[in-house]
Amino acid sequence: MKKREREELGVQLYGVQQELARQQMLLEKGHDSFNTESQIRKQSELDLQDTRQQYKQFVDDLNHQRKRGMKNNNLLIGTYSTAFLLSMLHVTRQSTVLVCKVQGNYAYCIEYILLRLHTQILLF
Image (cartoon, rainbow, N blue to C red; front, side, top):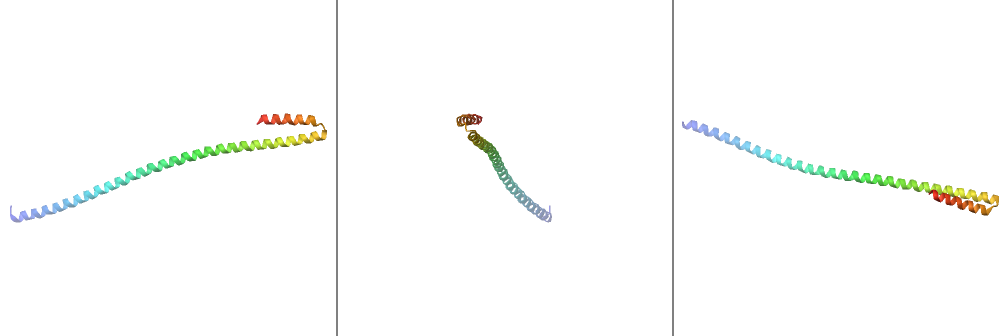
């Protein structure tokens, strides 16, 4: 080979080496980018798992509060029912006392009132 051919081959070799170095740098940047994206993906998956757990806890708490609210509502309805029955008992007792006063038979009225009270109390 002649000197000129060797020089041309040397120049071509230098160009190929430069291209190889550039391609290697691009490959390293690609690996770095992949690793960064992989870390971001893993962190996002962890965040998603935490969010799902928080959502599940929120739904469980909400269901518990609903059950508690329904239980309290049932207790409130029971209390209102008892209060209503007691008021009806009071009205019944007052009307019985008025009837007894009009009739003038107090002994009978007291027995009647006690019997009514006892019957009403047993209904509760």
